[in-house]
Image 1 (tube, rainbow, N blue to C red):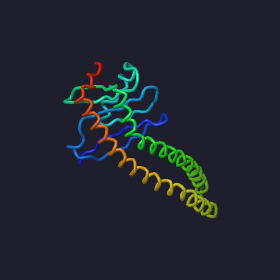
Image 2 (cartoon, helix red, strand yellow):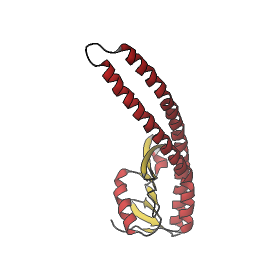
Image 3 (cartoon, one colour):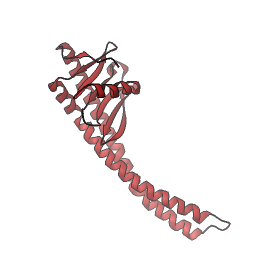
Image 4 (cartoon, rainbow, N blue to C red):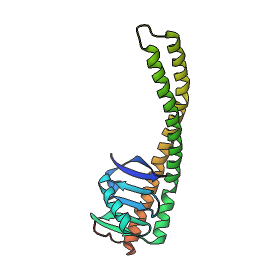
Length: 191
């Protein structure tokens, strides 16, 4: 089983989800690029990211970039783009939920860091303050419980994102095949 990456930039934060796929299902890379947003849904390889960034500057409006037979193409048909955006909506929504949980996790992490520093100070010297260390240990255990719960929530969200990503990927690949068949794909500008 090989892996491909789906990069979703949501609210200015890059979130990478690894989607397990069989090599035969993977196909060639593509990216759904949204004009005026930082969001891009992409499968493939990070080597294509610089190409996408350059094309984003050169192409006005949303576009779907992909390779077919190793050659790069774009589609700017409004109907194809609307269906592709719709396919990725559940993933984008879950990505935003993941960002919220991540920010909550960061807050709890800062509390844990501060308690850890307090613990180091209590343990310093020739005679550690055992009572203070035990009190800090209890506080750290209590402070860790929300992080454990958030971690479980994030794991569940990650699993949902993987499933939704696979569904979106299949949908967009079918849209690409139809766009090529209907003559809606045009060669991408040279980068």
